[in-house]
Length: 321
Image (cartoon, rainbow, N blue to C red):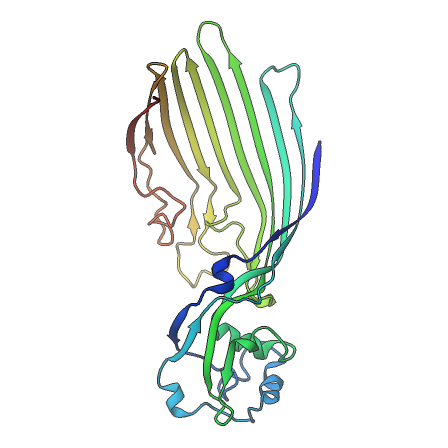
């Protein structure tokens, strides 16, 4: 049995702190204008807009609406470190009555606070006035003209506003079996069950993202391998599995009819052969059955999670001088 309780820290990197950046342009939605001030669910927006000196019925000037507004993308030297409170609980089981067998189980949880998130100007404007008061990190990211009230300058930069809550279970099982006449066999299964994956870039409840079960974070991911070694020859068959998922947990039938994404398993067959003490050959087939990504508009290009190349052969050698 084993357990750990820890606190982890990640300091902001050089780019996040000191990136000199450059100019950018974007269209801005001002939540304090007479059209938007009563929209949304915040009970603080109208009061904060008035506290900022914008009178009832205020609107930006006509020329402000007619184009994109200039701003800067930079680093933020005022960033502080991200902190994570972590714990794991696990066990390793190696029974005496099954030689070569082991089973490992680990439950883990990570809660990250003050995570660094890049805040765009429209997000900054919204949450500046939707917060309980004007004393918040978002109001410092843009500037208004003292006479017209127009937003005349802004900066897109990272701030310590995000949080993560992640929980899951890792499972691993191995079995090594030796024979005197037929070589050695090696079985291995590794699987991860994802219980929770929550991300909030701003700290506002409306922005909480629960991604468990979406194709980016499926409930289950697993790998199974079967290896055989005989003298100088080693062969392996490996299966890579992603559980069935959905494109979006927020999907409703009126959106479309292609939210479901089926499970996906690819097989690789690889091997190596020791020709001499100095020369090894390696060879194999990746995605041996030429399985395509699921036929879903969100992932048919792979989206980084599924193989888009199809069946591929490789042959190589290692030579040591």
